[in-house]
Image 1 (tube, chains in turn blue, red):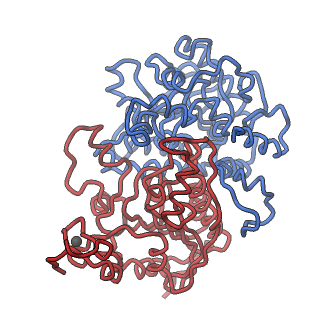
Image 2 (cartoon, protein in one colour):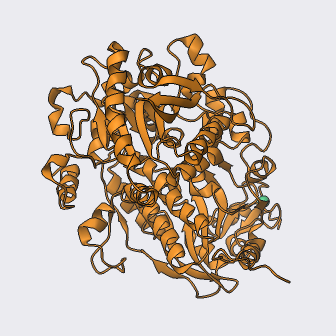
Image 3 (cartoon, rainbow over the protein chains, first blue to last red):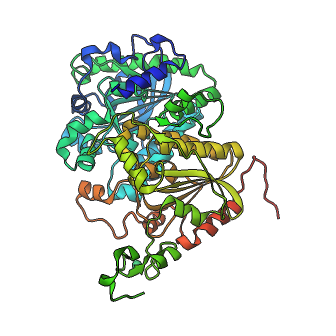
Length: 326
Length: 278
Ligand SMILES: [Zn+2]
């Protein structure tokens, strides 16, 4: 049987994209991997990607921010409840231009992880993020988000303070934020708690980052009723960078140094900077209305549905567009 | 209605209330909108029954009925995903976990989406995401209010990150209604958790819920295991969520249609002008 993804890719090429476009929406360039065929042996197994993405010494948001942006000033608090240390945000300069940056922050030691709640935000973290998104919009400053979380914190106090509402609102605000947005998955993109920072004009991922609807352990516990099947679940979920590019969930992969991002934070951050700068440059030139329409369409076309011929369908959409949900 | 001879009765005729233990005749239960007459326990109901209860008689016109799920990840757990879908289709008689269409509620024409927990736990994959999005887009095009009745365990694991992205897609679509002054009413029923609550479910201009419906971001089991502490009484029930400020009203099933009709009459789609005058 044919790999359905191969079919997907074939259908995608009907979308009048040039052959150099690779899997993503962006033209190929040195700073981004846009075609998984170019990865060759650098494509790691799903479970290895999970381990690399979670490596304690992988550069986390603050380490990346310090290296990519100069003069970063952190801003605290959601103006409603408290400051959530699992989300950092503020304003930094990218080649002299102000950018609002919001990211999830894991720790690099047990002690720091306890302080950062292992990068699992509470509702007030998402509300701080929303406050900073709106700040970026008000002053026409572009927004960069850095995703790295096992998921939103699932504790009772998070439920009491409206974890679901905070995430939903964060997603909503991002869908129509009137300023350019670039999201980068640095390490672990854990479910809705990650997506709350993930609605952007361009979504990039580090080469060995993961992005998933559920943790492989969680999926294994529910689907196979044992956590020991996590490795199998990781494979099935297609959560690694190259999978995400093929599924067109991310637009490009940011190369990591040989051996992984944790071996060289400076070089990783340099690669992140090289990847986001031209995107911000390109997006900043677009009229806001066009930007918002394209952002809507970017997410609108994600999903695979089959609509039999003869069904009452919206007019003027060819069958392959419907199959792709484009 | 107390009943002493339940053991003698064929089981397809009666149901035991999980809350008060009362034995209820199925016929009696259906007549009472699947609500226990003794303790008001609201039984889960399917999308078709829900539409019957909420809409003006004969007004529902289904749309996108034959939108089917693909298998983008070739996902296999205890059985392949297409087989799982097929089994759910046979079991529930529905094509996927949501029914959408145009209907009238108390005389107001609305775009309606009703989720069905019986179909793979009401989980949201590409089909649910696409149908909800199309319903919102139709509402925008026709300037009709949108009503969504949720019942869902969250995103559908078998579609991986594609399912996660349906949260962004649906939220983007309902957000456009808010920008255009078109009301969106979200009705949360038992259970509504995970990715559906953390997307369009929480974003209604009006958010209603049925009594004691289980409503939370993470399942209580997850919360319990993660935290290892005892949970407060009534944790993640509709009344608890209302008391913490995230639901406008808890409305008994028998009053749900008239309550939705009230809000639909009060909140007419606007075109930016001031319409209010005595
Ligand atoms: Zn009862």
